[in-house]
Image 1 (tube, rainbow, N blue to C red):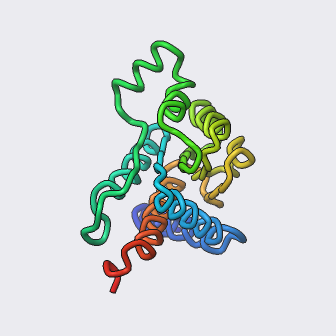
Image 2 (image 1 turned 180 degrees about the vertical axis):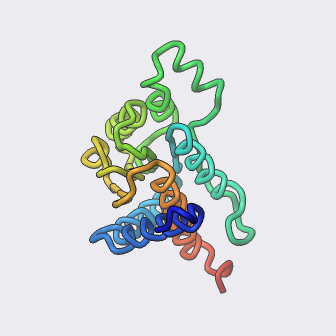
Length: 197
């Protein structure tokens, strides 16, 4: 990487991060597990739920809207929700504390057969770990999109997907959004093959 060309250096770093994920021993296999779990949730009449903080909340919202809207082609809307409504979040934070903002929503919406996608670049966000704990109590399966070794969530979620190499949230999130898009595509290919003919 050249200090004289920081833009190229950043693209090079992003490319190396993606390559490290693709070359990791279980990265792609875990994405396939994610696809299988999301497909089972939707075909079983369940709900896809997602949560995260900051940029990870944006990724959680992006994930949900691709299901309820359109991804590659027209098809029926699919059940997905991101825990991102300011009135819900601020109400819960005010009454129970910020660490409970996602757990309370899992308690409200989650049931056996659903899937929670928990996004945390550190793997240690207390409100995300509490959401996963609540999901486990309800029999909700969990996927963790994680970085920095996976943190506490690595051992808590059913399917940990960990971005290796990267040490900054931006590089980790760049891989997370690719994983989310590819998981959606994988499910769509099974449910709506005509969109890919």
